[in-house]
Length: 104
Image (cartoon, rainbow, N blue to C red):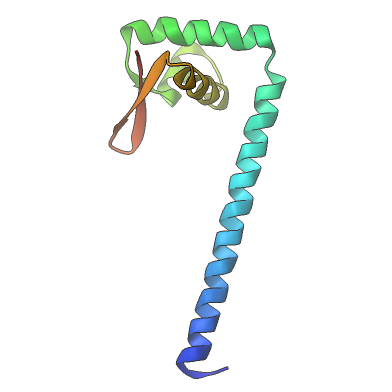
């Protein structure tokens, strides 16, 4: 194929490849997060939630800062915060390029 039509087809094919790759990476991240969550025991999850809630009484911070300050994994902290957000304990506020977490 040549000309504008061929160029358009090649461009669309490249776009489909990029979207497929993005989907595969997103799926891999989701599977990794799920596996991480399964590895953490129920007692460990409750302990992490307790630490995070105590920290958020005095601070508003991105999940990476929370994880670093409390010595928790970033992924586990993020997952715990999302679960606590669903439970209505914390809320996410967008500031710049990051989400800041605050106690409700």
